[in-house]
Length: 500
Image 1 (cartoon, one colour):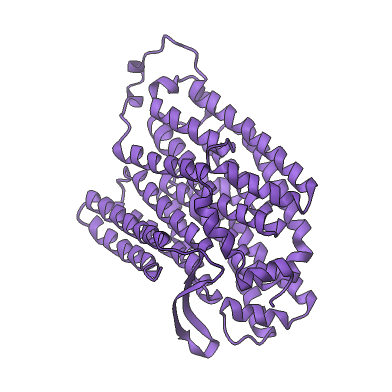
Image 2: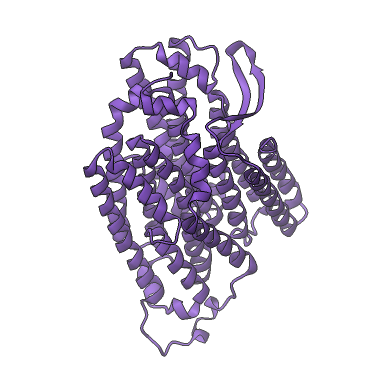
């Protein structure tokens, strides 16, 4: 576990090396980025192998940073953070494999990419709220440049919309943290210190501050009605960046809600719980219905991503150990499955057909022209629908069972979202890959589709498919980490309404 901070340092070092390597050759930049991502992922897997689940948060580094304000460079980890660190390494590695075709300013692309990954690792390891905020911003900034410089459809608009929503949310978070620090006379910005300070402020202030912090983080998690940046950003982003945006960046918002807003301000959570739950349920159903009528293949996956993140927010809103455990498991599951869906649509299909319009794809027998892409998308689609055997099933089932204990109505309406997800996924599979019935069509009439599936594409797809299948068959691999972490002192504040 003590090696985990090096995942941050290796990522930032790799960003610098990729930039330098890109000045010599694009191939060298690609391999530098891939080796960096694999090394960082290897660090998380090595830590996972030696991890003993418990309710304690293990401090990795704790040194003064800005002593006058009590700010520390404090990194710590538990089962929840380790789950998301492993996800980050997997998503980063797969994203680089699916970005192997980047030719324009390759070194710069992977420098921004790895800087984003370093920021994400930092967020998941931060135990000081100010440090958390710094890494949070570091993770967001490179995203803008990845979309604005290497994106496609309305890339400037998509990048700016993401940036404005993200920074507006960040401003709310910072305002809430400073409010607790000043009003509660906190000794520092450690999460435990802020939780103790929050106990001293009035109930009305807790309610107001919780609204600021939770909303600020939930914007990045795609909470309805602040979700509109997500599909636009997904569509505009290059494939690897779409995979990161859905795979890990949206998880930063949900993680902030879980780690900061909920344990620091349990009275605020109790007050706003029905509102959050209904917004989550609305996001599940509304985004699913919008996905059902989209004609742009990538927009289908973009709205699907928002719908599935609604389950994460619903699990957090239910605020009991079962539902929250399911929410963390859904973060992992969605990160893997959404990343795989974006990889197929953005890299395998769009790069070969040069269209994402379902009506155009309907005319092509893609199941015969691109059998590997068809098989991968069908499997990923089944996983996204929550079919047993894949990671989405135990995640959503755990969330719904935990939510049922709090409100049967929330659980039933959310279950409708599962049916809607099945509808838009089956429609996408049918139209995009099996829409053409012209058996006489010869693949030689579509030479641009005959480009063989490359080894990076196959490797990335196998990694992601293997992950969703492994966790689908053995969800306890992650739940055994997650569940004990939910009994930490800070999380006890969520279950019992305050710091004890």
